Amino acid sequence: MSKKSVTTVRVRYAETDQMGVAWHGNYIAWFEAGRTDWIRAAGLSYRQLEEEGVLLPVLRVEAEYLKATHFDDELTIETQLASYEGVRVSFGYVVYAVDGQCMAKGKTEHAFVSREMKPLRIPRHRPDLHDIFIRRQEA
Image (cartoon, rainbow, N blue to C red):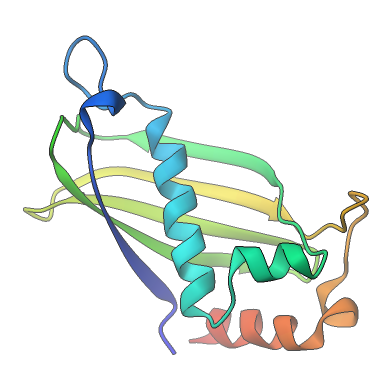
């Protein structure tokens, strides 16, 4: 089982600023797309988790912008599990251009919580989910 997932996006015109450069906030949405694909590749879905009462709010976001991206650029977001501790999970992201240039890097940290926003200890609450994250962490 691979630790990484790969997501492709194309910069839309609406995602650029007056200078024709992709607005920095879009990277956060692209990170989310990568994270959603990573979870899907692990055999789950965000929707399924939420229906079961497991939420993953963002606690922290980091982004480092290395090169500008522009309208119609095709980008690849590689998403990888950075850490998993049973209550918290973090993901790392690298955004590449078609030619392989690294355009940006980032990280998000999340907590597993209930609908009432109470922390969930995944090993106890969902042992099957815990096993998936452990296997992906060790891959």
